[in-house]
Image 1 (cartoon, rainbow, N blue to C red):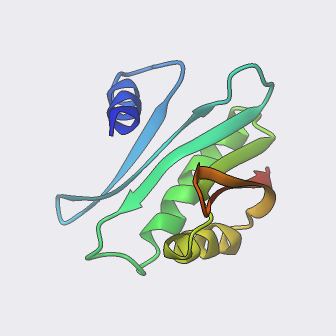
Image 2: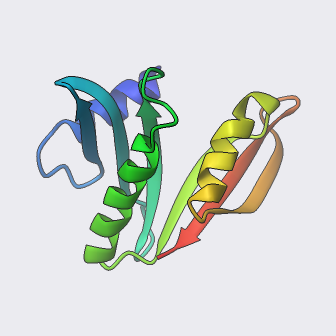
Length: 127
């Protein structure tokens, strides 16, 4: 939770050098958001920190739209690679499927990273 608050607080500041946030609204309701930023000590690599959609609109393409907005912004910034980290547990199958459908490929897996039986899965996409 502390990490999420740090990222959200940073992303809420205009022109923050580490985080960019984009929000999507449906009928004046915050329906989803995405937070990303440059990966420290790299050239042209960005991390996708958070993407979330309201369960009431899930499956309607809002998450994919947010990803497209992010990727268009990153191309304009001359980004070359996007990296995302997630869990390897069964509960994150849909999350990994979502990323794969968007053209992200699993490029690394660290066994037992989060806890025993919960791998860190790293997916990347070249822009």
